[in-house]
Length: 85
Image 1 (cartoon, rainbow, N blue to C red):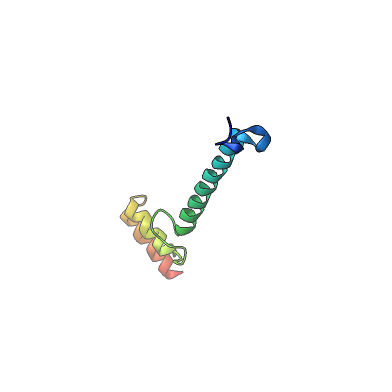
Image 2: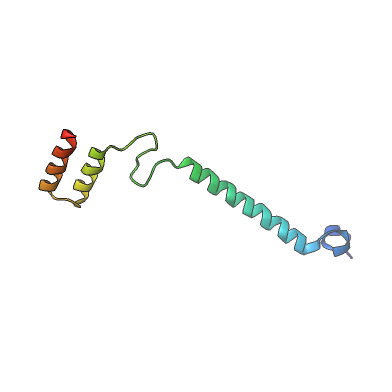
């Protein structure tokens, strides 16, 4: 009766639960490898600045002004303070 499926019977191995566990482990390994490759391939943050670029205080000030976090007077004052120091 089990001539065609010798490893599906429990005495010959782990049977169906073993086969399901085997394929589950294979799928998990593939998912982990893909996630590792995609995370490793991404460099920088969501603004597109790579890790090799160091942001200066003027860069941060420009970003804050562009986002509207500070107004023109505050931007010019802080820029002037940074250039003096």
